[in-house]
Amino acid sequence: MAGPVECSRHALDGIVVLDLSGSMGNYCGKLFADLGADVILVEPASGVPTRGMEPMISCHEGAEASLVYQYQNTNKRSIVLDLEQDGGRELLRALVKGADLLIESEHPGVMQARGLDYQTLRKINPALVMASITAFGQSGPYADWQAEDIVGLALGGMLYLGGYTDTAPIAAFGDQA
Image (tube, rainbow, N blue to C red; front, side, top):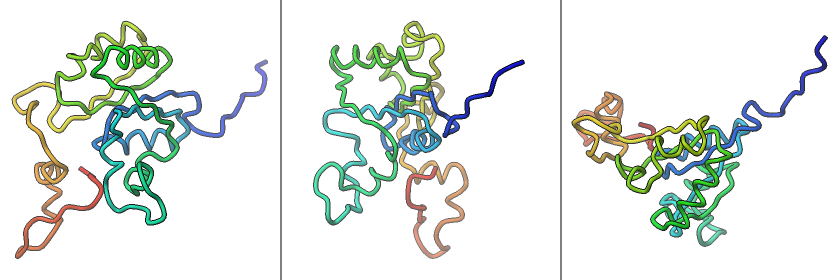
């Protein structure tokens, strides 16, 4: 007869996520963190772009003042790594050894040029799941195209619901596409 089953407090306790996704995917990492995963936000030395996005908390100054940053990165830990340098890439590879999931949103080919693509990282950790969030995928005729959220809304048909017939398109706040 089996003993009692240990219950965890959160659905994703014990899952380690490396979040390299920037503004395009930080919300994805937030969902994992909110469900109990240990999410590590990997930032460049300049910080993720959302650190500078308004609105700002009026009583705060500096890198922690952005409400967008605070919202998208709730419950995450953070580390600064320069992935353009060998040392930063080596530290990321060390983190990959203990990770379950890596989320990234670089343009196609960037992670491969750094030696941090899935084929390379899975040699370090065969159980690693890697999610690449890009506007138009990793390959195909539009892979190199860049897009803002409003383009995703338009191409997905959801922009039809935003705005009025006599105005320019209006997108919902928060990069929802």
